[in-house]
Length: 365
Image 1: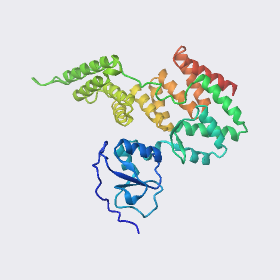
Image 2 (image 1 turned 90 degrees about the vertical axis):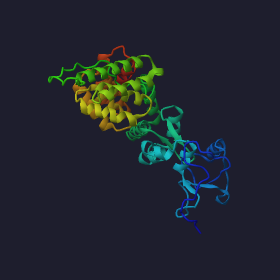
Image 3 (image 1 turned 135 degrees about the horizontal axis):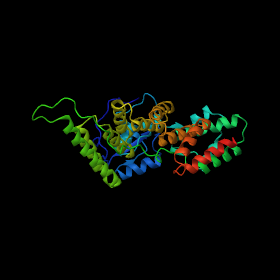
């Protein structure tokens, strides 16, 4: 008979580093985030131990395969369990990654041996795996679609691998998000002097803006000092914005620091605010395109990149990111124009050899 579903008191408080010493943990069903071996090792590090029967357990963890309708009084779910252990919860990442089994069902010409060879060759990178399945990010899903489409056209899998090797000669990695930097503002725009004289003994807008600009300059100097000074730069940009919340260059550069630290959620509203305040900010539009491209939102990324190019048709980084985006999703023809634009603007640039490799491959196709 199932136990009551009322949650019993737990032997440790909620938190990232719980005192689990002496706790006995049983798993009901299978966990998505951890194998049994990984679970046992994580519990050992936390001072607890894994037991075989719920009757022996202080805490019962219900995995994804737990029988329906059999919740236990001392049960917690997998997300809570991972959070207490300080382990990233796979369930929170599922919206951003794709299961290979699901992708193979969608692209039936891609067989298990194909997947193994793609993984062995380094083309398909798995971000998570357990005994049920493996998961890939957007670039991996796009790769399997392109492989399926090539096989559907009658191309042999050996020819597909040859094509991938040719592409690799031009670009060593499909994952370009960490290799192309965000666009930083390095100069303050010219400002008009206030038209209305200020009241006596009152701080003027011009004075406030000047103070904000001083903090902006200080933050920029900290950024130039290197990664070890990023925290000082972030504080200085925040101080600048406390004096002038509409200082778009500070918004953009502060967002860049959050982005480079891996915190896109903090960066996004800052970029969006900058774009709303200054509709002519190329940097704001370009950087928002990068965020959407990183998340696999191709149409949104294209929209922001197109806006950036409308403001500055020679913005070389936007041409580069659009070329890479179209290459990544299998639209080589659309990528060609942006590879050519990139080479025209940066013939000796960091990506020039890869751009020529892609263009050469496209001409063969």
